Length: 210
Image (tube, rainbow, N blue to C red; front, side, top):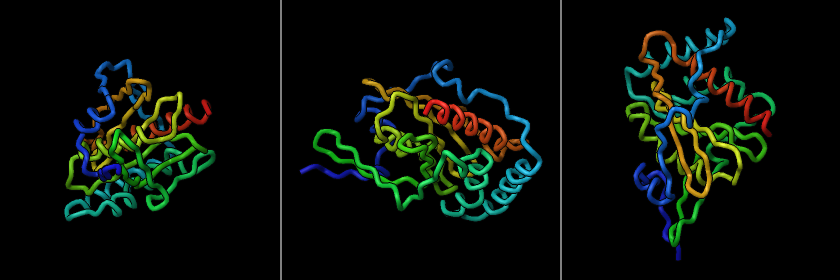
């Protein structure tokens, strides 16, 4: 009988070792995040500025991940265009993934999963705001590895509310991944502009490829 391992118990080293996953540090591997923020329309800048202000106010207390999603992720995904065709978000309770590795079966759920038919576009694993964004990486990579086979690269967004980290995964015989620099709401300006621009560009590229 297979041993069930909850995905949330895995650390990054265990995910790498179990799936032969290699982190790539060459900037040329993940160029998609290395772009300048677009000149967003006034109403979209207002939404992202409001999200930043609301989060910074609420973060003075303790934030549950559901509040993080409402305050920050919802306007971010809206500005990036993931509530429009051809994308259709699937909520956490609708997504359950399982992956067998030898005699072990690893299970987990996503908070938010953005799909273009059977193609994964952006997976978002939100974490309680007092945790480092790196705490989301093992689960995010697991979900991306467990997604349906594809010849295209997969992209993910990990966040704890004030930090955002983009991931790229190439699922070949020896899977490889890389990550962007962290973007933070605590920095001067509003780095949600850049994150939204990157997500929108990734969405356009994947939609065209599909």
